[in-house]
Length: 368
Image (cartoon, rainbow, N blue to C red; front, side, top):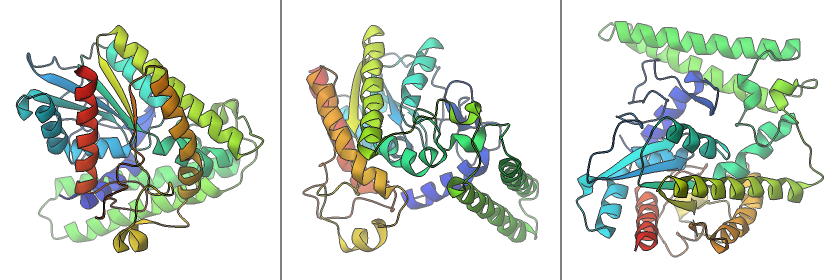
């Protein structure tokens, strides 16, 4: 399965199967017969993050959003080989643990790290690859509803009770489609060789698309004032500069705290600001990227384009303060080939190979 198919399959599964989590905001439900391995916390791992490390191996946890997740899940062999070569050891001695999740943004990574360590997880390295979600998501999701910018993405979708009857109706319609999807998945599982399988598959796909359509309508709808449970303190900002400055401050502070937690537990931490095709001047687009992968009206474009410069500055401040932080914004500047795979932010094999090499090199320099 290539990266495009895996991303599509993940998005299709994610929509009806994400659930509330008391510390992380949301996660995937590992009891819902997922089409790929999920650990008990809903992360895409074959083994539990709590399993004891193999003696003599290097255990590397990777946190962040979907770009970090696909780096491990789809291209883990590349990252593993790059790290192994820098440390002059066999590739099989590098254990990768995905603590990344689609849509995660700080301080979710910080909270997740603390939860895993509190439960007894052991890591040699923690790699935090993020920065896109932190500035791209809030302006076109929570920010439209007045939801606090520290809250997980689309928080108004997943908390109840909603304040208005219209919101409750939307929530009920979305939940109905999710339950329909689940019921159809169960039918497919029970009747794998049924002549009705193509028809049931078609109905399931339609239910998934209906769910996504309703969620998109809900994202842009205007409702009466939301409850405190839904929006928190719900701060408003005088201008975009104030909002992006606050988003970057939370990102920077969360990373500094992750570094402190790691140092206190004998773990080497390194933060990487991920590349972003909407940040001007970071890459000369190929024809494919210009026509298919760069979408001028994409809802994420505004935040990713305007907010990324604030993260570049925050990354420099982290490094100056002694936090291992590397800005990968320009990692594709001299690459003539296509490195992006969609109009969001995700990378193809070449893009992941270049990022993996940069990560491995930085880890080796830090440990040298």
